[in-house]
Amino acid sequence: MAIRPSMAKLLALPPTLRRAVFSAATSSVTNPEIYDLVCVGGGPAGLSLVSALRSNPSTKNLKIALIDGQDITTTREPNDPNAFSNRCSSLTPSSVRFLKENGAWDHVNVSRIQPYHGMDVWDGVSGSKIQFDPADRIGGSILDTIAQAIPGSRLSESRKKYELGRDTHVATMCENANLTSALVHRLRETALEFEILDKTRVESIQLGPEPQDETSLDLSQWPIVTLPGDRNIAARLLVGADGANSPVRQFAGISSHGWDYGQHGVVATLQLNQTFGEDELRTAYQRFLPTGPIALLPLPGNKASLVWSTSAALASKLKQLSPADLVTMVNAAFRLMAVDLNYMLTDASCNVEEELKWREPNTKATETGLPSYFPRITGVQEGTVASFPLRMRHASTYTGHRVALIGDAAHTVHPLAGQGLNLGLADAESLAKIIGRGVEHGMDIGSCWCLDDYNAERWAANNAMLGVVDKLQKLYSASSGPVVWGRSLGLDIVNRLGPLKGALMGAASAS
Ligand SMILES: Cc1cc2nc3c(=O)[nH]c(=O)nc-3n(C[C@H](O)[C@H](O)[C@H](O)COP(=O)(O)OP(=O)(O)OC[C@H]3O[C@@H](n4cnc5c(N)ncnc54)[C@H](O)[C@@H]3O)c2cc1C
Image 1 (cartoon, rainbow, N blue to C red):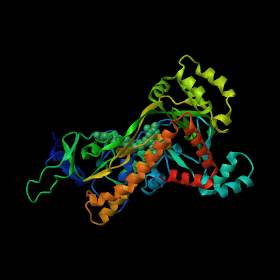
Image 2 (image 1 turned 90 degrees about the horizontal axis):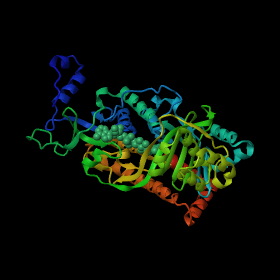
Image 3 (image 1 turned 180 degrees about the vertical axis):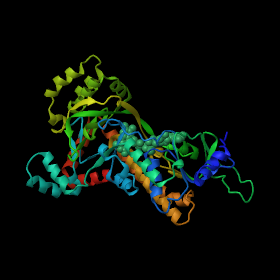
């Protein structure tokens, strides 16, 4: 049932709001409100698309509605500056550039983000490793020159390299909530507030009615989004930024292919034994265990974000451990031989603390690949241990008639390369650019003439990245045999080849 505000209340509103409230209250499937673009999903992908459209003079006047079932507009400043969300993403320089260009980055709480400058990745079975640091990207010769000129610790060498190439960090850790709240702030600067319809779940999406006469607009091929209160919105272009189970993708009949990894990503915010200053260099660590990779990603101060991908059974076990035992298991997962770790994870009767105390001194770092400067985990922030099922999915196309998909609605990827959100932001940037071009050329932005370029630009690029990440996941799932030997040899070779390493690092941070 449409809600009809009393005429007196309606007339008291400012004219633009009055028009919107009136048309919302009187809309129906046969007489919907008409928007240029309706974006379902106010996660980072949807918000960044709308923010980019609002920042472009060609598209800033489009009539846009952004709909999300959750409360995305109430800004909740974290009470404790030392407490961090367990949902963090590592943003590549390319993603940060896009967010800077559309004005959202100015609203990010910089005291809660953490750039990192190096990345140490090693094989949990053979101990082979690959280390990336800024100088790999700016050229092996510079690395060599500095290493020769400044004898001393790895840290002091890296610091010097950092001074040389201030912008050469690999990526920036940012809480997803910090990013979405910055995007909402940016939208408030540029857009009228009622266009963000949060706490509003889409009830259904259907095609519009046949035109009643020759003079009425033909909406029969337009998606009509039905919201609670019988509010109906027709979209010239409907964007699905509505996550992995995308209702927009289902409405458009776009199939999505892939598989479940049978793994869960266990996340938590951890405390380290070292406190890092604001401008100190930080490193991200990842060890590939046969059950899945475990990553420790730096957050400000003495905090770090854990992403431990493992079997569903082990994930459930890890979540049930006491905080002290979880800390012990994470230390063990980075430090012990895979066989010792497996024993600790599977023998219910073992005292994990005693086991680690006994096994660690008898484990050689040369065999496990553990970097000498790897920190010790000392605590876990209360209430941050959670897990997410991991799967690979790719939509067969990102566009249909009056429909486009971005972010997780279009693809989901294993988190081992920290690419999911970065691919979603790249989709948003590409779609915003193509809509802008369509508007400038007087095109119908919902037509395939306009949208095809978006599909061409993003589908193949994402497919390649999804393929690489999937192969890596499979390559590192083997625990013995020639595969282990081959991958270790590969890692060692890449680690010694400065230019190839630089190219890989450039590719990883550009997506
Ligand atoms: C453990 C883990 C670690 C990760 N680490 C990284 C990383 O380091 N780097 C990285 O780039 N990526 C990472 N990712 C991936 C990243 O988190 C996701 O790719 C990203 O959050 C997806 O954003 P999105 O905006 O596309 O979708 P979502 O964040 O899922 O947003 C979808 C939105 O749609 C809304 N919605 C859905 N249905 C409806 C409906 N019917 N009506 C109204 N609203 C609706 C939802 O409320 C939601 O707000 C990680 C993922 C996991 C699981």
